[in-house]
Length: 193
Length: 193
DNA sequence: CAATTATAATTAGCCAGCTAATTATGTCAA
DNA sequence: TTGACATAATTAGCTGGCTAATTATAATTG
Image (tube, rainbow over all chains, first blue to last red; front, side):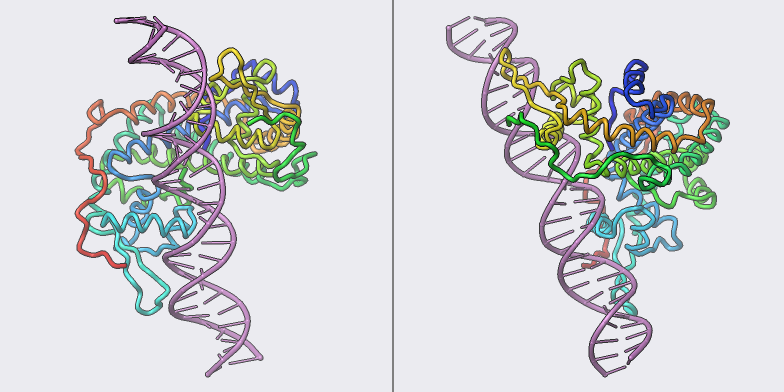
């Protein structure tokens, strides 16, 4: 995700909404702010995990396994739950296996299937990382009251619902004049290199 | 950023907070929800931009240029404002130049410097994309009241402030038992493949 | 004024995602 | 029972970020 340093201030937003009357200034402002804070939080999480030699993807796989009875799942179920492609999950599992944090168990009944099991070392890694993560997160959110957390949850649910309209095809309630074009447009008379 | 399909439900959170008493359940819950909504919004934005042959990085560069007097800036200023490395900005500029949306202007006084200028085609591209983006965003946020937007802004500011404590070194208020290790841990007795 | 240091942009090469293709296996229906 | 299809995992190859190194130029200072 983009870093979005340098969010637009009032004067910039006014300039843009002057040219583009479709703009809802407060919506744009809070939307960009939300994206930026989320990016920063994600970077902070990366920072925390990297202290323990992990990245978000691998960490999340360990957590998903810990949720399971016996710490066992399959690559495809993990891919769906982590929201990554199966190909990516193969790579995550490769890395975790190399570190001994999970093990591949080959199914003898259906030989297409592989089970993934959290190892003792994997559980130990979680027991090292999670208290650090939880502690940092608790401190980070300390000043946000319980009421504010509830309010935030409610707003997030509304946004969740709104996302489908954001993604809707042109015409389905979204007025668009725009045509599609894949690459070369009007290839101006400048060009230097 | 991770997709975080399948957020933990109450029973999972209880299981984890049983093992890890450091966990603040409502903080974890709202934190993960925030990350997921932001990821989904970012994906929705990608979807919108791709209809016009753009990606977030290039789109943001066009916007930053449009903010400037005369639509002119430099690669390093753009990199700082977009929050990407200068190397990445070189690549973004290459792509935009190839499409004729921006032009490189070589400075004759200081020959290390290059200016980047939004072309007429670049401005036209913005005039095509921005109304679509603003319209979609307005619809997406329609159900979020002005009061809720204010509340959200306030909470985001608090989180902003909290992020530094999240990233703080171990010891600076973060109680950590964890040691660092870069790669090979206890390389268990399993391992197949 | 020559050598060092600083600055701007770019290039080279890494990494973690992705999609599409491949390999292996299982299932079902003519 | 075999041909068509379905499913699971992996591999191959692409992309857009990144850092570190390189190239070119300017500024500073002994």
